Length: 422
Image (cartoon, rainbow, N blue to C red):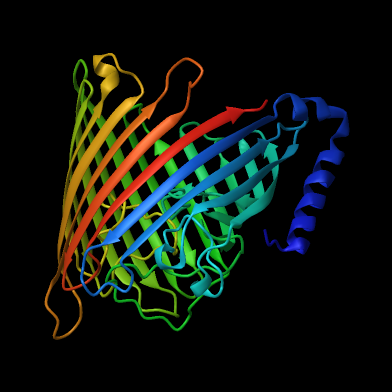
C-alpha cells in the first residue's frame, strides 16, 4: 500500500496536536467514538457484445475491507477530534485479459494484470464550533458538484478541506477545496481531470488540476419542499453553477408525487472548451410499496456535461453505466421500484428502469449518436437471526449504442456486512 509518508505524518501530528489542546475534556472524545468494519465481496462481469471490441470482457472477483473510526469531540467552545479510514482490496480472481473492472489496482505494466492487494490509510482532523464542523484530510464529499464514487470494492477519496454549517435553521452550507483524488481502484493520490466518457466533445489545454473549489446551500422550506444552489470550480478547466428543487406532494394516504428538478450551467475556465447547459426532471409517484418514475434530461451547448473524472454526476439520468450527458443528448427514463415490506417481506427490494438517449452530436460528417440502457437491481438485507444485516445485491445492466460507444451486458453481485466494533 503506497502512501505519501510526509502527508501521513502531517495529518497524524495535526490530529494528535488538536486533541492535546483539550486534554481535560478527553472523556467525551472517547465516549462518543465509534468503529466499524465493513466487508464487501464483489463479483463483476462486463461482456462486450460488438465483434471489434479490444477486450471481450472484464471479469474479476475481490474482497474488500473498510475499517472506519470516528472520534467524538472534546468539550469546550471548540471541540476537536479525528477520523480514520483503512481500506484494503484483495484479489480473489482476475487475469490480464479480464482486468479493468474498477475492482482492483492494475500493474503499471498492464500485461501483468492486477495487483494481489491494494489499499489506503486516511486520517481526517476535525473541529466543531456550535453547529459548524471543519474537516481537513481524507474525505468523501457528497455534494451536487462533487459526488465521491462508491460503486466498486473501495470508495473514491479526496485530499480536501470542508466546512459544513447548520447554524441557521433549515439551511445547510458547505464550502471547501479538493486538492487530489485517489480513485476507487488505486492507492495513489493524483491531480484531478475532467471525465471524457461518452461523446462530450471536450478539448483542453489544461489536462489536470490540483484545485477544485466548491460551495453549496440547501434550504428546507417545509418538510416537503427543499431548494439548493451549488458552485464548483476545477481550476483552469471549468466553472459550474447548479440549482435544484425537490417537492413531495401528498396525494392521499400511502400516495405521493415527488418532483426533482435540476439545472446546471458549465463554462470553461481558460484551459478547456467546456460549454454546457444541463436540465433534468424526475417525477416519481409512490403508491404503497410501489414507485413509478418518469424522467427527462437535455444537454445543450458546445460540449457535454462536465464533472471530475471518477465521480458520480448530479444528473437524473446518471445510472449504472451511462450518464446520458454527451453533447446535445436528449434522454428519457422510465423506472419502477417495489419494496416488499408492503407485503410482509422487509429487507427485499426491486428496481428496474429503461433509458433512451438520442440526438448526440458526434462531430462533422458523422451520423447522430443514440444509446439505451436497461438496469435491474434486486437486493435483500437479512433482518434477524445469526446472519442479521448481511446484504446481498444483484445488479444487471444492458447497454446498446449506435455510431459510438460500446455494446455490453453487465452483472454485479455484492455481498456486504458491517460489523460495529464499538
